[in-house]
Image (cartoon, rainbow, N blue to C red):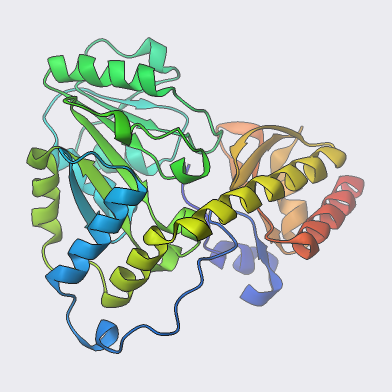
Length: 333
């Protein structure tokens, strides 16, 4: 599954302007963390300093409950960080829990290390040296329990391998993160800032794990990989626990409303997280295109013709617009 969020294809095919569209193709929070209006001018004019980077890492370490014995690296989004892992991790067979976010397969295939797919963490390939798990998974929200992941991590450690856990959506499922529980296992964890905080354009991501691997990644990133504004805003947002707690409750409530709205229009919601719903319908492609003719952009999947993923509309007006469009589309179909 590739990423959403680029309306270029939608506009080229179905017309309109960016302002005409309701983009529900991503799992990005529609209620962005308020960008402070008092950012110091130096954040824009000066090269990012070491102290600003250390403040960001300290805030992330506390927010994500990263154990002291793990190293933490920040980069310009998890997309960059995950693309650096194939050259930082040991040789050997790679296994990927699928179906999932397609970039994980792409970056390993690009390095001539085609991952073997497996559908359940309880059916792990016996020769895997590197195992990739998105948790909670995208697009179905499937959640692997921490105890099982730790056991996989120990197994791979004994083989001299690594478990990589992509926790891009872990903020919206408290208790899902494996980070606080890692002891001596060879486990690497990716954390995405932009999705929960709704500031994907800042491009901030984190990699937590052993110094041996994270230092290799950091050496490639080198200096100034994050902008001054990203460091300032990211630090404030990660330290703002009150906003995070209130936002999580709001997202859960809005997802309940979205689930009801989709069900009322004949869609069966069977997966997702508080940031997106995965629903089933007889012909997802036809529904996707019917919604697109009404300037609403969703996600469909080549490997699952009955699946359609819908992000949070972001408020009652947009939810009503979606409901009306679904009702019209169903009549049309």
